[in-house]
Image 1 (cartoon, rainbow, N blue to C red):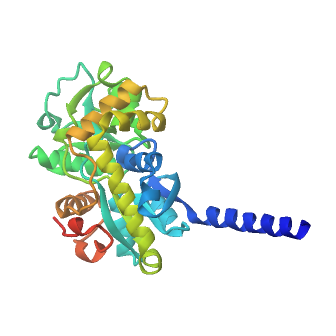
Image 2 (image 1 turned 90 degrees about the vertical axis):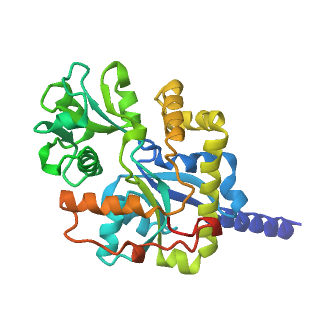
Image 3 (image 1 turned 180 degrees about the vertical axis):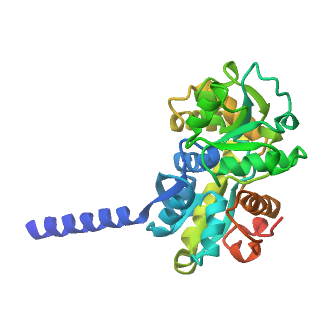
Length: 324
């Protein structure tokens, strides 16, 4: 009897070990500070990943930039949802990764703001003024130059002032050391929203620049293609749920974005739904071309790149594989 019990115990341990190995975490840049990764939270909560054939149990929040790309490459899964600019740079530097889907479509998760008493009424009024950014070559600086371009200004028509952080950029704005800045919607709401700042450009008015793309290593694509397809399918189901069942999605995301009040999460999510912020995965080449142009403006790239060689759409569902 004791041998039988020992054997059963051993089998239970082996099964538990298998379950632990089967469970995966995914890396998503700035997971709780950037709504680009919202579909992961929804898909985990609703069981969409398990339905698709992969057990995703948690999200690791990436630090952003090249750090997130390197972390995704080094992860057990070899996958991450990260900003496109450091991905493009990494591929140019011969890192063995591809862009496998589009995560979010535009800068709709950001706002361009001024102080309530500012004389600036449009982006054109920023000519000769100061625009606060966190760091040179950051997404904030890329946002700035595309906003200027969209308004018919040249990148150097507005002085870009690096303050070291988004909080520093806001402090400069509040103290009159800068005339405008761009910040993520979550931070905007956390710091007081429209009760404290005036929105110059809202979510639907911002340029087409994708904040997030999915990347995969060659090892994941070649050896575990089924996992990658399941991951993309589960995430797609999460995106569809946000659009089709917005109130329930808001309830799920309110837990992710705490301590932001639920009413502010609702405001944010509904704005992003209206702006069609989240992509089911289909690559939209114009947004990536805009990213390359912005990278050249801010000095991250010296020349054009062949984006088509950086993309692999084979793991997307058939109806999403064509590049738009």
